[in-house]
Amino acid sequence: MLLYVIRHAQSANNDLYTRTGGSVGRTADPPLTGIGHRQAQLLAAFLSAAPPEPDEDAPSLIGEYYARHDRRGFGLSHLYCSLMTRAIQTAGYVAQATGLSLTALAAIHERGGLHEVDEATGEDSGVPGPNRAYFQTEFPQLILPDELGEVGWWNRPKETLEETVPRARAVWAELLARHRSTADRVAVFTHAGFFQSLMTALFTTGNTLTAPHLDTTNMGFGMSNTAISRFEIDEETIILRYLNRIDFLPDELITG
Image (cartoon, rainbow, N blue to C red; front, side, top):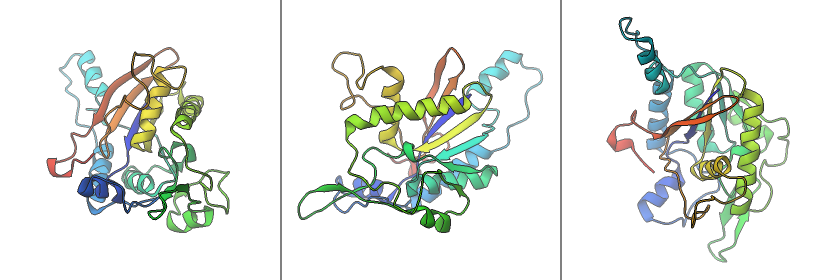
């Protein structure tokens, strides 16, 4: 199994923070910006591009080295995204470019879930979010989780930071159960905060990193908008081949 963990393209909240340095005016489920749509289109073109013709005179091991960095194409087989609009929109471009179906996994949402701050009181509360009928209308090609019904998919308080690592661990277990003993090439379109929790889940048995003075509050893994990270997984090993790859974007479209 090859696993590609990909952050969504620039959202309206990302743009708000870039312009103001704060979150006043943020929304619980922001869409992509104009820049975000352009990023996602370039990402889709990169992930779906036909591989170049191999150099028949090169040693076979050289070809393997190229392939490790996807210089022979990505050849994706499965696409997953969260139920947050920015992830669906980003992954939708890739699904269209590759012809693959797109499946939603509710558990790969951003840290905190869907929540909004009452600017008068400062209270940060969870909001229900869209229900099944909404997604069927707005994103008819999206394969929805069986458990999604007519109540908004979030519909609970804001998630705490401590709750994110056990969730990430459960997601990791589900992906392994589905794909570990296969040659599948899986892309998961998710969020920067969730990626931090996923990496913590991979490196530890608890909720904090084992290195001195490092935990979920002060240890980070860079993840720009539309960045790709590649994991190579078999029955015995997990190799992180590359992290935060954005070389397919021009300078003016690099955000985050």
